[in-house]
Length: 92
Image (cartoon, rainbow, N blue to C red; front, side, top):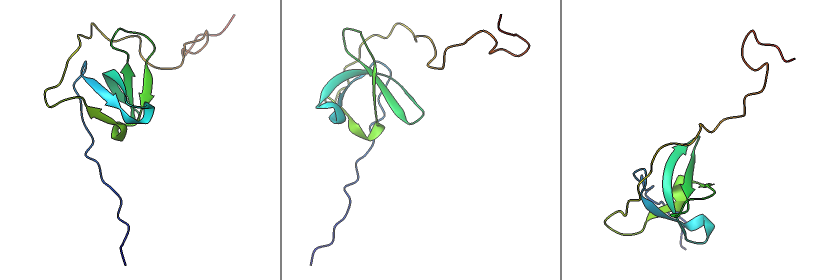
């Protein structure tokens, strides 16, 4: 009788700007931007809309990482600030 054992994957920890493959999205290739709150943020090579996936779903494209220049971080990913959100400020 065989015993079922889960397959354990080594989680790849890419550098910012490294092109990786996202197994959860059909093998889509994306540029690694950051990991935040347990999710990996990827962006198309030519720029565009970021998407998220789990760290266990990304893998390197080759033995030698391909890096794409990342000019800088976008605005922080957080809820928009509305009037009255700051202490002591009231909405008009």
